[in-house]
Each structure stands twice: as structure tokens, then as C-alpha cells.
Image (cartoon, rainbow, N blue to C red; front, side, top):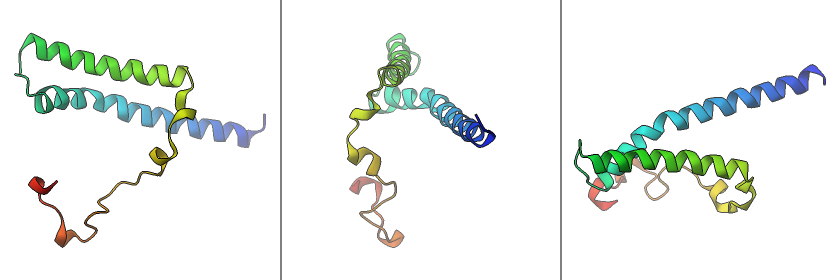
Length: 101
């Protein structure tokens, strides 16, 4: 292989590892938010700790299975076309307050 192909593979590999690291790093905080804020469980209870653990495990195993089974091809087109931002209120002076969301 020539050096330009290797550089392309290296760049994509580094980018993939960086994205994986960012997602993996935020799993614990997402699991904590899900367990304590969304479900409203009490901090320090054994059930809450178990739920938080299983949320992380389910996320890791699901991501692994999607990649292993090559299920990315079944993702709907609209998922890739999703844009971030607030298209409902593009003007910051008209932004929704928390209760309106």
C-alpha cells in the first residue's frame, strides 16, 4: 500500500478512537441521569446502583452487537439527516423556556 492510503486509514482510526472514547466516557453520566433524574430513584439504594450498572452494560453490549452484526445498513436515512440546534426558535430572543419544552 502507498503512504496516502495508510495515512487515510490512520486518520480514520484516530478519529474513530476519539469518538469512541468520548461516547464511552459519557456513559456513566448518562446512566446516572437516567437512573436518578428520569426514573427518580434514591441515591445510595441497591436497586438504583443495579439499574445504573445495567444501563451502562446494555449500552455497551448494544453498541458492540450493532457493530459486530453490521446493522448500520438498516438505519433509516432520516437518522443521518438529523441536525442539531433549535429549528423551532432560531432567534435567541424567542427561545422557549424550560416549561414550554
